[in-house]
Image (tube, rainbow, N blue to C red; front, side, top):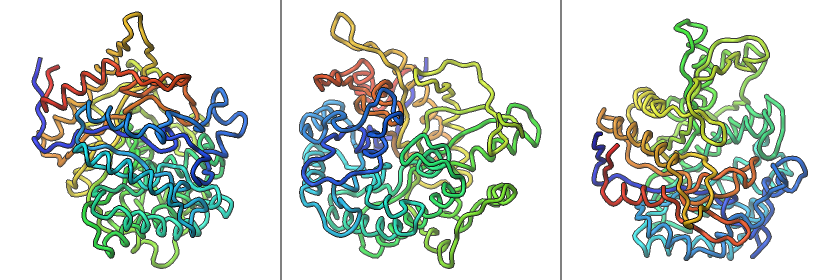
Length: 450
């Protein structure tokens, strides 16, 4: 057994997202989002589930902040529902929506918890989707307007900002694979979206600096991590494409002002390219203060030009390791490898693990508790890798477990549970799981033994 210690100023936290927990989808002036539309479309979400009520966190701010306080977290990462504050995406502001976030932020600050705010976690106003969504440059300026509103409204109260959560999901999972809202299956559209959101990110960061907002701003890509099946150049390149698709494609333009050459060449080889216009790359190339790392799993990949290899000619091969209940293989060392790669490539920037967690669908037992030992084991394995990264000189400043509570898990509906707190979706009663108490102990001591 070994002791794994963390720096005294390490930021321990948990994360959630607006559409997954808030509910109140049509209350107090909130506009419709693409996820309302998508989830209300038969066949798009398992069991016909939707976020109409979710965890009802909109009406339970005090209760949920108390869960955070009891847990002892230093930061809480949440996202803002864009259509709750700007129902049409631009123009008229919905004061009731802003007031909700003020109540949340004020409650966090009163309890000594730092707000870590994500501006966009996938719930685009439907009014903007009707104008072409992220496939149109209209959404770029709309996002910049929305970001400026939030910066001015919460200046001095929120000091940690994330522009976009998991841009790969926004672009490719949603517009090429069609799994998430708005459900398109168009590769060129997905590439267009990936570029437009980067320009929007750059405009928001530039506005943040112009306004002199105190604090820091960054982005949180879901950087995939694939390791080669064989030590061949074909397999190595196949893994580079998987990793580049979700990571380098977004971070290289921010840090270096250009897309990664190997990805540009691959897209052009199959007949596609991003819709860059003059000035775009300069806008994207704004200094950021940190990178958020969302990590759950890794894959082993080999080159395959057949259908199994897909658009990137990269086929996943099972590692033969245990999986979480959502079917994701567990490979904790991949977290260290990803942190090492990111630190080496981008000059050892400040990093936060903005999401890491496991789906285990354990329920209430006869003693009234949820004994989710598998989640505890998963978190322990990954925190070892986080500690290892820090000891190896990687500038890792915080860890945010996903998620505070069970919630609407996008296309999976309510069938997959990631929370430290169990939610009964019929009664909305919250029950702390064993993992909640374990994580509370880690936070209070700032170390753990495994």
